[in-house]
Image (spheres, rainbow, N blue to C red):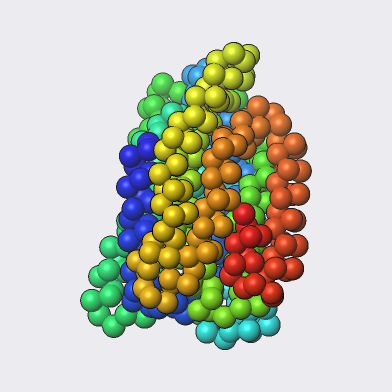
Length: 389
């Protein structure tokens, strides 16, 4: 899982490097802002259903209740298609208002509309990946969630760059990548299930049962998403597309530190749920402690590099990006604090502390928004970095 996460992160890094080199700071800013809007919209469409599916799959698969597993995923996906489709249409229609009235950049209309088409496939591929994770199919889940989209995006944009390079090539590369990955996810999920003859009859899991689990989790995940993009959105309101592009490059580099967290979480989440359900609290404690130590060990070299040579690292994207060295340093420290805390989010979500996690994340997200509005008008990208950290 860690190897695949690293591979996916490296491909994503290459894609971001292509964006920065070929489109410049302004093009990357437009792409990043449109991506932030679509990613938040996808999170609203899922509203914790992906995390609820992990718990349902992990618990029912352990009891060989495969009919309930299949039914839960099917109904969750159908619900997401309906809700995600409605949100996608709303974002498409609201694109001119968002671009001109909120971000004061008419060039954003088309990127927002293209990215809005990725909301449904991106939501679906994540739900299917989490369902596979619930079945302990960690490699398949990680490949779909961490590797496929950046890989196909990079290949398609690389091919488009051989012709005339515009932001449209990057937008359609990402959109096509999410659609392809969603179909791959459906295929892999069907293969992961036993044959129909081996399945017990469904126990009648309804969408209401799924939502009862997902709604508290949804608050937590949406707040995490807001924490991740609020600074970029506020920078988009007060700053220019170039500033957003430079800040986005630093933010994406800092996120490489969290590879360890994502890799370990992909394994521990279903184990947390199963151990808690079976009341194996001592094993749960040991698993959490060892996971934290592993994450710190893996993340430390990247933090040291970012903190010591930030301007040189940012220079990989081009000379215009060197000025973001201080931004990278601040963001890296914030990410390292996250590593030091460990898998606390997943631990709470998988052990019936969804409401506690919800209020923790609501508080943090509101803090990020308030600090962004205070600091970004004064310090620009550096203010956004402090708010994020």
